[in-house]
Image 1 (spheres, rainbow, N blue to C red):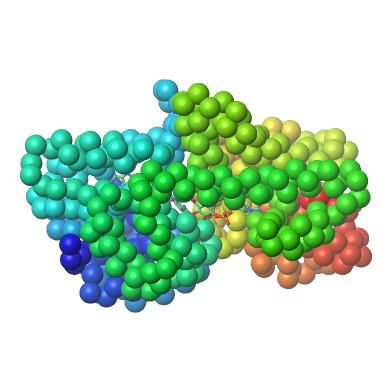
Image 2 (cartoon, rainbow, N blue to C red; image 1 turned 180 degrees about the vertical axis):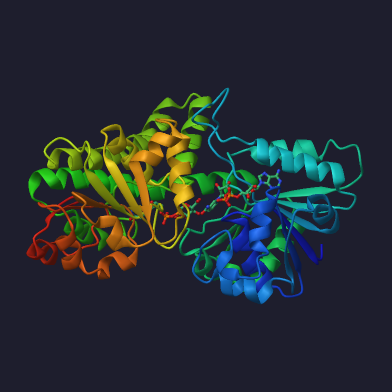
Length: 459
Ligand code: NAD
Ligand code: UGA
C-alpha cells in the first residue's frame, strides 16, 4: 500500500517526537497527530515552539521545520482516521488502578477505544500500527474489534514498539539501535519498513511475528530496569564494605559481555514505563501460572522501592533522626535530566516520605513547573492539597531554594547542578550543611573541602 497520509492517535511523549521525525524524514507524507486532550493539541500548535507540551532537546527545531508543512496537530480524530492509510496507536497504557489486575496489569481501555474509533469511522483499508507498549497478545484483541465491524474494510495490524528514552528521544529516533516491526502481512510490514527506510538502514529494521515484537518491548524494559536494580543492590553492599560503586560499575562494565551502560547507581529508577512494564510482565507471567518467572521480575521493583526508601531513611538518620520543621532543598524533580516528565520520579516518593516526617521541602527543577510538583504529591493522596502547599515550596532560582536549608537532596542529574557556586550555597545554608547526592554527580573532595557533610550512593 502506498502511504500518503499517516494519522497518529496520541500526542504524548512518544507520538509527538516519533511523528515529528517521521514527518521530517518523509516530506511527501502528510502526518496528522490527533488527541482528545485539546489543551495538549493547542500547546503543540503554539506559535512559540518553546511552549510545546514536551521538552526534548532538538524537538522544537524539528517541529518548527515540519509543522504546517507535512506535520499537523488536531483534535479532529475521525477526520484524520478516515483520510489516512496508516494509523499509529500511541496512547497511554498505564497500570490499572481498578478491578482485576489492579496495580499490576496494563490498562488497555484507551487502546481499545482507539480500535473501536477506527472500526467505526474507517471506510477504506488501513494499516493499524501498535506504537504503545502493550501486553503480549494485545494485537489479537485489536484484530477482533477491527474484523467484526461488518464492513468490507480490510485492516492489517502491526506491532512497532518504540524504544526511545526521554531526554534523548530525538537522537534515539534519528539513530535507532533497531526498529522492530511485528506482523503477519508482508506487504503491510514493508509499507512501514519503507517509511523508516527513509533514514534507517534496512539491516536495522527487524521483522518478527507480532507476539515476539510485543514481548520484546516488555523484555527490553525489564532487562534495562534490572541492570539498575542490580547495581543499586550492589550500592548498598558498597556502603557497608568501603567498596565504591562507581569503581565496581567501571570494573564490571569493561567486560564486553556486561557492557558499561545503565550501571549508574541512583535513588532508583523512575519514568512512566519501567515499573509499569515490569508489573505488566509479572502479571502476564502469573496469569499463565508461571510464578517463578513472576517472582524473579517482581524483585526488580521491590529493590527499586527499597532504594528510594533507603535514600530518605539515610537522610533522616543523618539529620539526627528528625527532619521535623527542617528545610530540605530538593534539586531536581524530573525522573531524569533533559525532560519535563515527572511520572514515577523517585523525587515524588522521597518527598512524600520526608513530608510524613514533617519536613519542609523546597523544590527547584529547571523544567518542571510548580503545579506539576503539587499535582504529583496530591496524586498520592497521603495528605490534603493545602497541607502539601503548606509544607512544600517551589523556586525558580536554585540559590533561593537552598537558602537556610538544613540539607540538599540531589534528585535529578541535571548538568547545571554540577557548575553551581557551591561555596555560595554552603554559606547560605544552616550548619552543618548536608548534601545527599542521589545521582553521584558532585566531586566529593571539592564539596567536602568547602565544608559540606556529603553523602552519595554506594560509597
Ligand atoms: P502520554 O500520556 O504522554 O500520551 C498519550 C496521549 O494519548 C495523551 O495525550 C492522551 O490524551 C492521548 N489519548 C488517550 N486516549 C486517547 C484516545 N482514545 N484518543 C485520542 N487520544 C488519546 O504517553 P506516552 O509517554 O507518549 O506513552 C504512550 C505509549 O508509548 C505507552 O504505551 C508507553 O508505554 C509507550 N512508550 C513510552 C515511552 C516514553 O518514553 N514515554 C517510550 C516508549 C514507549
Ligand atoms: C526507558 C528505556 O530506556 C527506553 O528504551 C524505553 O523506550 C522507555 O523506557 C519506555 O518504554 O518508556 P526512559 O524511561 O525514558 O526510557 O529513560 P531511561 O534513560 O531509561 O531512564 C529511566 C530511569 O532509570 C530514570 O529515572 C533514570 O534516571 C534511571 N537510570 C537510568 C538509573 O538510575 N541508572 C542508569 O544507569 C540509567
